[in-house]
Image 1 (tube, one colour):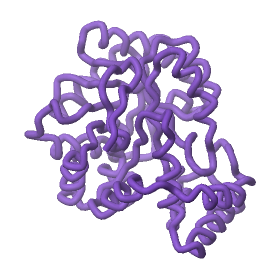
Image 2 (spheres, one colour; image 1 turned 60 degrees about the vertical axis):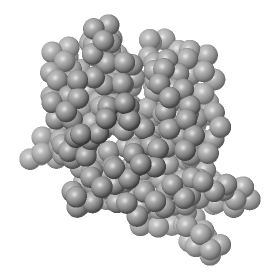
Image 3 (tube, one colour; image 1 turned 45 degrees about the vertical axis):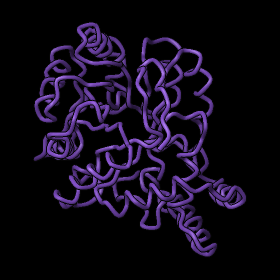
Image 4 (tube, one colour; image 1 turned 90 degrees about the vertical axis):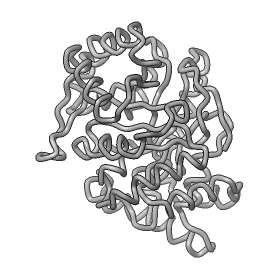
Length: 311
C-alpha cells in the first residue's frame, strides 16, 4: 500500500480507502460478521482511512463500522463521517436534509457515540445538491460555519464536502475554506471530470478523495441498482462495455477499479465492500497495471455516456 499526504487534512492516507456504505446494506443484504471481518482485513492490508455517514442504511453503516473498530488502536486509522443528510431506518429512501448548527453538532455527537470515538479526522457536509438544491445555500453558510466551529474547537481535524455536481465543486474549491473534498463518480472509465478540478484543488491545498470507481454499479457485470437514474438506453451502453471486457478475458469491474485507483495525482480512491473476497480482489487488481489499449477501447464504447450527469 502506498501513502500520500491528504492536502490540508495533513494526514498520510492509504492509496485505497474504505467507504462503509456497504456495511449498511445500501447495495444488498449483508452478513454482519463477514462485514466486520472485512473491515479488519482492510486494516491488516494497510488501509488506514474509513468513511461513513449517518444516512447510510439509516444508521446501520455507522453501527457496524463502530463494532468493527471497537478495540482497534485509534492510531491505526483515520475516520470521517458526514453531516446534513439523514434517513430514518423505517423510511429508508426518504432523506431529511438539515444543515442547521444545532443539528450538525448533535449529529457529530451521535456519530461519535455510535462509532466509539471522540475525534473525527474529517467531517464531510453531505449531498447539499439534493432536493433540487433548495438547501444548498444553507449548507454553504450555516452548515459550513458549524463544521468550521467544530474544527476550531479541535473536535475534528478537517472540513470537507461530499457531493456530486462539478459546478458546485468549482465554487467550493475556489472560494471556501475546505481542507479536503470527497468527489464521487468523476474519475472512472465513463467520467473523468475530476481531472478538471485537480489544478484548483492543488492550488488551494485541498486533498482529493476519489470515490465510486465502479460508477455506482454501472461499471460492473451485475449493473447498477434499480434506484440508479440511468435509463434503459444508457444501461445498454454499459452492458456492451462489460460484454466486450468479458470477450477480452477480463471484467469491466477489474478494469474500472485499476483505472480509477492508479492516477498518480489522486491521493486516495475510496471503494466499498462488506465481503473479504471482494476486498481481496480489489487489492489484487490495484497492484496490477491496467491495459492501456483496453481502456481506450472500452472508453470508446462508453463515449455515448461519457461525462453524463446522473441526478
